[in-house]
Amino acid sequence: MKKLINVFFTIVVMAFSSCSNDDESSNADAEAEKICETCTNSKGEQMELCDNGDGTFTRTTTLSSGDEDVDTFTLKQLQDVNLGTFELWVETNCSQTQ
Image 1 (spheres, rainbow, N blue to C red):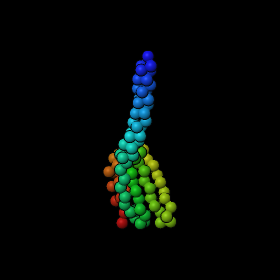
Image 2: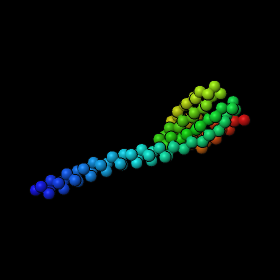
Image 3: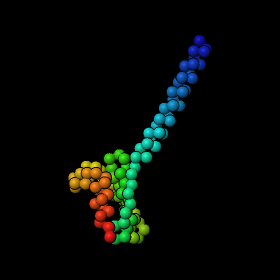
Image 4: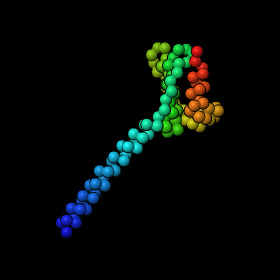
């Protein structure tokens, strides 16, 4: 009976310890899916355009003052203005450069 309890305890400990690693790897995978492009707008300000990998897109503009302006959009918002892909959104934002 003592051996049975020890085996059961070992199985429970192994099950809980393996679950925590699964959560960490899925967070790393989500972060790895983020894709960013950079360009300079017509005012000479640096823009970073990112597909966050979760259906949202972020535009970070570094203003001439050094401040950052961050805008986040959903895929639906981009589709509503006929910019339904990340590539088209980048092309449209970056074509407004000098």
